[in-house]
Structure formats: structure tokens, C-alpha cells
Length: 95
Image 1 (tube, helix red, strand yellow):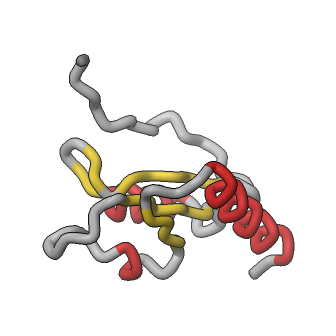
Image 2 (image 1 turned 90 degrees about the vertical axis):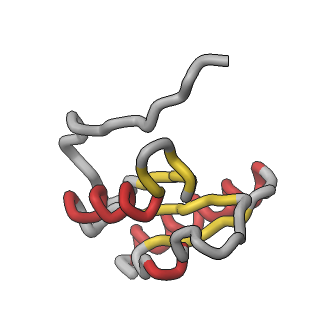
């Protein structure tokens, strides 16, 4: 199995009002909250979904980033679609 690397987004230029990012809390070399914080620094309009199957102590607290929502693994495709749709509704209503 090939070694996976964290995705870098230095070319990210435009984050529109309906843009979303989905990231795991556990990434190689970085945690998802740090990545989300970096992306949110580029645009506060970005909606972030943090995901994780881990609930162990020592992991970053997903509720510490108030701009993000958390989805616990395992989740169904339907649950993810509902969460994305909810964030899109929020973006369109300006909340």
C-alpha cells in the first residue's frame, strides 16, 4: 500500500459562499483542526466538516473549532449528504 501524504492546498485561490472542506482529525503530520484553522484564515465563509472515528483522549477536540461541525465515523452517505446540505442552507441564509 503506498504511503499517503496530506493534501496541500497552496493554490487555493477562491473560497465562495458555498465552499466546504471535509477533513479527518487524523492527518499525516498535521491534525484536521490545524488544517481547518489555516483554511478558515483564508476565508471565514468556508464551511468545515471535521470527521473522525477516534474518541480517545489526547486527540484534538473537534468542538474547539466553533466554525466547524463534527461528524463521527462511521457515518452513512446519507448522513454526510444531510450535513453538507445543512451547511449549504446556512450559507444561503447567511447564518
